[in-house]
Image 1 (cartoon, rainbow, N blue to C red):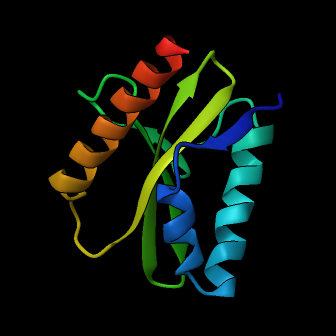
Image 2: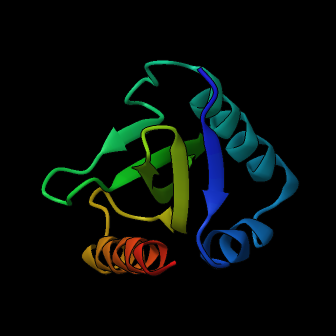
Image 3: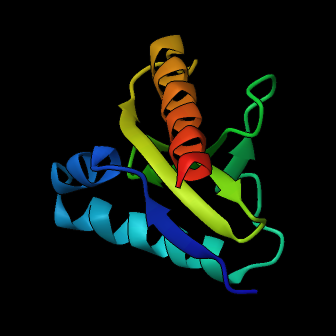
Length: 113
């Protein structure tokens, strides 16, 4: 299994650049796992119910929780959208809405080209 990870615009990169080295390392570790493992455990990649194909990549470091939204394209390609540090039990609706909007834009732009 070798999935390819791409970024849509700069949303993820801006989030990533704000993290410290150890968090970046953990993010890279989880990305490698997603790229190489056939069936990624839900602990790291979870489909969000009722979102039309939106997933969240789940990263934990020490007692901090980070989420990066993504979707699959053509089965193999993982497209990354926004990321954030989770402060509450429930994922904020505004972050999910933003990710869904970005996913919609991604597919609209792709279909145009």
